[in-house]
Length: 105
Image (cartoon, rainbow, N blue to C red; front, side, top):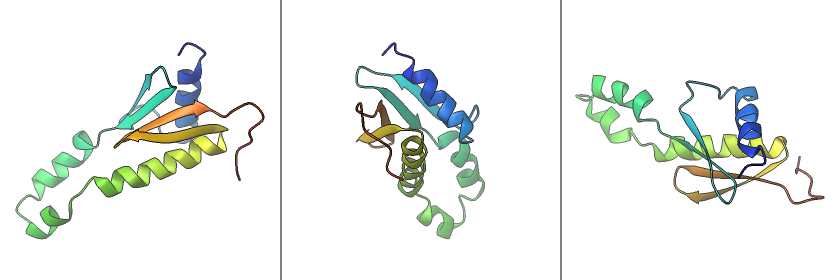
């Protein structure tokens, strides 16, 4: 996609506090812009530091974190006038709203 959508997505993310170092990856695709996130680099050190704590080890799951982030990003993009879908686990597809469509507030 060469219409500048990736740059707009990056700008929306930066304005929303998800700039460099957030772990978000923005990648152009034929359908729009894919936004993904990997928490391993952020979470793994904490898990390893507390690996002997069985209570922590049993509760650690990234599914809830991915879901919370997907919802937060979807709201951020909707507010900026974009449409989002989840084509795969841990991936958000950002596209432009159809002509004439308005963000729901």
